[in-house]
Image (cartoon, helix red, strand yellow):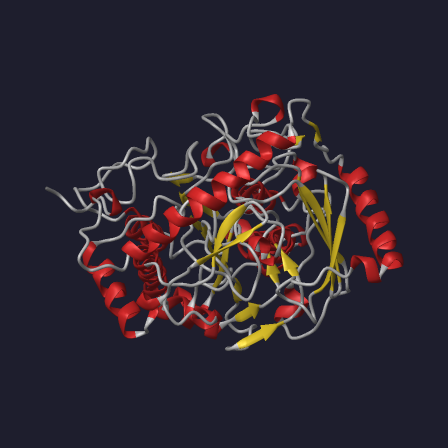
Length: 522
């Protein structure tokens, strides 16, 4: 055989073996499941005795749990952007949920003006979807996007198929058809949006079984409005009664600015969590039916902490403090599960801290694709951990120069091994916690460790400068009297109203409001 013929044949074989021509049978596929507002303690495997999540528990048992897994931010859009880009929030500029007021438009009697922020994914970056699409993967998106208006939707950032991703962060029209979504046709009256997104994903998997794919299932649930079916609400009312939860006289405690839930007994929210779990089950069953479970990486996580305050006040993250929007562990620690067939040991877990930016390089390495360190500059590959090895110790950082709707305060955070320092922009104070001894962040030890505070503050300041972080400025309109009046209203009016409302959720004599479930028709 002539050399030119041999060369041509060799190039042909290499082409067949390249990612662009690999089939789903030879190239790892990826299913990335992102839940909105799901708390780290909302799942059965994580200790919830009220919520029922057998499908997600099974997924956790099949792969590796990162018990110190974190979101990149305590609210949604920044965290989602960091997953998509592999960059920390101040680096890409989306530091609050898109649509939140900033600067002088924020007028809630607070001390500082929330920093300005970007309102769409930057075009110059290469998203996770674009990296996989360039490598020959079919890329699919379903569910919540909330990373820009038209022109910055999933199809504008690397996804070939988009089912339901557009501007908004909560489901317009609710969780039951008819809903209003320009990228997802509404189903028959009463159809569950959560289950529909799972079915769309399962259909995509079925149609793509002969070629490598990335399916990114980004649920709107369990974000408000909290809605479920009457049957599920009644199921969890009965369960709460059997567990003795209906006898609770107090469900909330005031933490700084707002009440925070201290118990899981909300039957509406529990119904939402069960529907989420059933939706995950639909996708996992399709992988099994097609045989793709043997070659598909499944990742499961949330974009921020559970809603223990603000919004729906729907869950508790104890023993972690706070929840969505807040600077404590309840606001940033997440379910974080990675299942890699043939690599992760079933039922394994790790205490290695991991964060949302790590998914990008981890997935590239699992796909056998070149890393893009200039893009995922703030993430590291977790593949060594998935194989049972380790990665180098590193500091983790967060920057949220805003006020959360759930009571969070403008702050920046550095975690260094077991130590966590929170810097507050209202008054410049620092809190220091040792998470190994105080995972509930109840004891601020900053005064006992001034040298550690100074050293960690210096590294945090260096990171903020290097990433170009925007810093809140004093609000010239602030008066202490108005702030005190606001807090008095929280104590004397909001707290009692919440206690009654959440007790009523479990009162079987009370007919739920029709807007608790869109499937209930007159």
